[in-house]
Length: 255
Image (cartoon, rainbow, N blue to C red; front, side):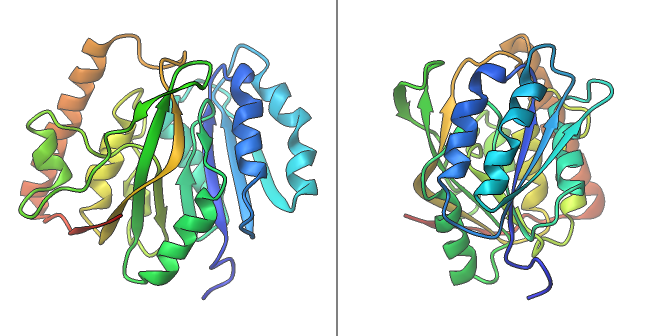
């Protein structure tokens, strides 16, 4: 493999997340896989998010984890901030970890084992567990793979969302520059899923690798706005696929 061909990069965008940073950081520090990198983008937080991450920066380096901390000069929102993180990364494999969420203890090691076992798979998403604001378990998440004859977009057009956490991908995908919902405040995951499967083979594993904190601040202000944005993302995907004759790739499903 090329230089850094086995490095895994965790991409994080944060806004007013100071109260959650320690949980986020601890879940990364317990990961055993190396080489490991973190690229953290603060999106003009008004609290102590930036100072909190800088205070624990050396803990990452002491644990042989590379870390880059970036700060947006103006508010860019989630989609654009994650693209900036990716552009400043040096890994071959990537995983999105929101600043108020956490990984299970062996998430990176497990996901890398799948990429190694399935060399034709370019991107993998996993199951997640949902927690409340205090990280008390609520229920299992809703991720799943489309059945034969379906795609994430066809399911989305019927109002069914199946692609959420944990979102990982690699440079095996030929157009990672296309997967970011630049400027989006919501539906960033949906946009990413629809773009990933337009260019490369994907995989879903029903194993829980991600701890999602439900109801955290900083999200879009209303369900109504989020649903409107999702509709725009779906309509754009339909138009794009018709215009360029794009056919979704298969998504392999494993337990």
